[in-house]
Structures are given as structure tokens and as C-alpha cells.
Amino acid sequence: MLDIKLLQNDFDNVREKLKKKKVDETLLEEIKSISLELKEKKKILEDLQAEQNAKSKLFGVYAKEGKNLEELKSELSQNKEKVALLNTQVKEIEEKLSIIASTIPNIPDESVPEGADEEDNIEIKRVLTPPTFSFAPKEHWDLDVDWLDFERGVKLAKSRFTALRGTGAKLSRALINYMLDFNAKRGYQEVCVPYIANRDTLTGTGQLPKFENDLFKLDGEDLFLIPTAEVPVTNLFRDEILDVSMLPIKMTCYSECFRKEAGSAGRDTRGMIRQHQFSKVELVSITKPEESDLVFDDMVACASDLLTSLGLAHRLVMLCGGDLGFSAAKTVDLEVWFPGQNRYREISSVSNTHDFQARRAMIRYKDEKKNRLVHTLNGSSLAVGRTLIAIMENYQNEDGSITIPSVLERYM
Image (cartoon, rainbow, N blue to C red; front, side, top):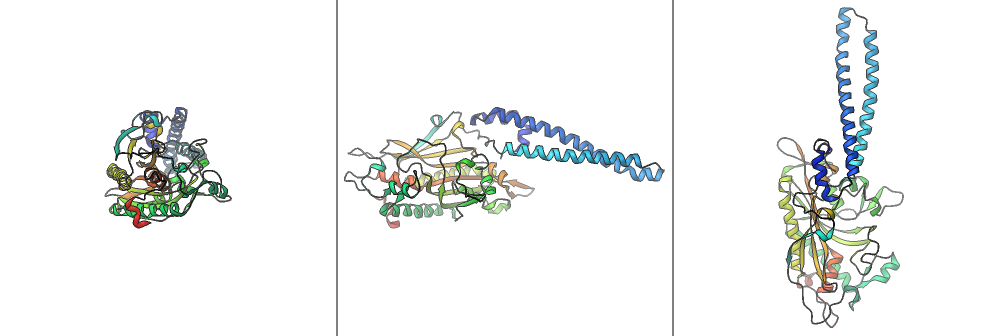
């Protein structure tokens, strides 16, 4: 959540920065109007409380001087009613302001480029050279192997679900174990978390209240299937004050992820690019603000080096303001080469949310003087299904077989 005090005290600057994310200006103006109303009400309340305190002290003076106390009592009683009414009004306005503020996205980092959508993202660099083939490479759904069973996945659930079989299922499991081991060697502690989260947890990382329609909700329960392990892993420390010696906390986690893909009608309807359920290995870091840029670079390098170890050509892309996620202050996407599609496709997003999630989830640390908000970061390392099909396409052979990358052989 944005710092409401920052909105109140530096509104024009915040509004200018949020233009990168194409935030509705009428919503910002509403926040400004409510903030001014709140400020006025608080000032009146403070004056009334000061008056109440001053008049309360007059009781002893009046009693000593033998003055009639009835008029003073009447004034204090009327003042008390006004204070109670204003207290109620202030709380209502604060709640209204908090609800609206929770729908405002994070302020983009200064390094984020201007832009409307993914077409304006900036390529940072390319890693490895895409393979060349003596034949026309196929897309993963056209490969002559029985690893992916799309029809039975639909039969079991609905469209955008896939069953894995034989070597495909074994390769998926091998990738999960390899990714976790790779990340552990880079200093990320493995954790295992529930795949179901409550409302407070999803509010802490920014999925709620704005994106409830994208989540699978459990009938009769205020619980949801997680869209990413980022949600429960970050919230492990919700409402906690951490000792500074614990930072940075670096974690990696395998989970299944569940998304309605509500806004993706007609996109990637074939294959395993966009699924309602998919496996992912996540990186999450919690750190001091002054170290978060270094931690961010470390997470990007970890995901990139993992792809390199698998021999998969990829590129790093800095997202522009218009393509930046709700909670992110800045994001670098890693896009892997798909020869069957003859294009790069996203396989990981690494984001620094600064103190946006920490303020919502109240994750703090104690330094020498006071409690401060941490910075939280998250990133895919990697989306398992997309890594599997990237291997299928990049390691396909003319005879229809698929070569397993050497680093995965012992996991198979």
C-alpha cells in the first residue's frame, strides 16, 4: 500500500510518478479530496480536545473560587458529544481513505522507462544464442511425444489444464528438484507453504482487494487457492518485527499456482503457455531498503544463470511503466527462446516492491533507533511448465526424440 502520508503531503509528485502506470487520475483526485477533508476534521477534533482539557482543569479553580459549576458541566457535556461525533467521522473517513488507497498501485522506481504496454519494454541483454536446426522446428504441442495430454487434462477439469505423462511427468519433477537445489546453492533457504491462503495473506501482497476476480475462491470459506508462492512465502513474516541481523532473508519455494486468467480470453489457447494450474519455483527476499537493489540484481542473476545452466537462450527485459504489475516498483522479465514460435516468451518475472507490500503486511525490522519497513522482492525461478516446453522445443531432434539437458540427467 502507498504511504497515505506521502499522498497527503506530496500529492502532486506522487500523481506525476503514477502517470507511468496509467493510474486513473479521478481516483487520485478523490483521494486528495478525502485527505483534505480528513485533515480538516482532525484539526477541528484536536481543537475541541484541547478545549475539553482546558475546561476540565477549571473545575478545581471554580470550586476554590466558589463559582457555579453547572454551566461548565453543560459546556463540557456538549463538547464531549462533539468530540465523540468527530471521532466517529474521522474513523469513517480514515477507513474510506484506506480502502481507496489499497486500490492504488505502487509508485514506479526512477529507473522504470515510460511506455504504454509490453511493446515499450526495454531489452537489457541477450544470453546464449538460439539453436539452429537443419529442419523446421515444431511447437511443443506438435512434437511426436506422449508427454503432454491436453485432451485428458480438459476431461478432468476444463480448458487450460494439462496432464503430464511418462517422461514429461518425470522431467517436470526433475526440473523442480534441480531448481530448488540450484537456488539453495545460491543462498536461498527452501521453504514449503500451504497452497490455500486467507484474505489477510492475499491483501498483504496486493492481490486483494483489487484482483479477487482473478483468484479461485473456496466455496463457503474466506480462503483462496494461491496464484503464486510469493503470497504465502512473503506473508510468513506478516505482522512481525525482525531483528536486523536476520536480513536479508532469502527463500525459495516450489508450489502449484492457480489463476483464473480472467483477462486472457483467446490468448495462448493451445499448448501449456497459459494454464489455470501450473508449477513454479519461486524466489522471495526480505531485506533492508538500502540493500534491495543489490538483492534484486542477485535474484535476476540467479534466474538467468539457471536458464544458462539448462542451455536455454534468453533475454532480460526491463518493463515499462504501462506494463508494470500492481505491487511492483520495478520488474525485469526473463524471456526464453521458443524455436517453434520463433520468438522469446516470458518464463520469469523478478520484481522489487520496495516497502509497498511491507506496509500492507506490516513486516518491519528494528534498527538502532526505530522500527522500519523492509523491502520485499519476488521472482520466478522458474515457471516449471514453461521451462519443460522450452526444453522440448530447444532440444528437439529431427527423428522426433528430445534430448535431456545434461544437468538434469541425474535427476531423471
